[in-house]
Image (cartoon, rainbow, N blue to C red; front, side, top):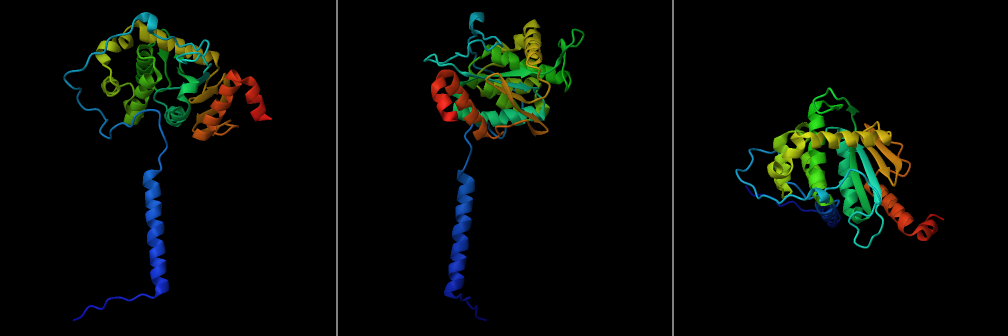
Length: 277
């Protein structure tokens, strides 16, 4: 029995060729187009197993080098003394909306990290009778997660350090935020040792004080929803199940554009005014 080789007309062959080219181009576009992030890419196996038996100890900073929770003059870390745009995200560490918000700002920071002074402020209620001195909407484990993140930022105030730690925790999943083994692993992934550098803050009075101060700051800003986004002292957007009250948009490009305008406004007022006319 002979096998007949199918024959196609020139028109059919041209159609098949076009389909193959279009399909290949689409696949290539899907695999090569990515959105830049500020934080590092974490490995898929990050869902934390047993801690490694040994760590590289990182020397501790002096107390005088630790940052406060307050954004005072917006000049932090700017070598040419340019004023940075204050950005505040009102969040809860185990809130899905906060995770979405922080994921968006991970991409925003890839564009404008050198123009902002960003701060996370945590939502809760002061309650001296509670285990951590505050009540958190997602329970004590969220209070613990808030404290871990605040202590890590207090210990490692450089943006790429503390922001990377939070992104690492988010990557592992909100269900794990507050888990000390996760905190240890995320500290290690970011090049630091939890036990020698951060743990004492989380288990002592300092961590509670940081959380209480953060909650008071959120109250001063009248933050009630996680995630509330303030840029240059103005509430510009809220993520609460859906995006709300975002007159200037809620995409990465929208936030980048807003920050760049505010940066020009506080550093080059005349130039900023010209761009808005």
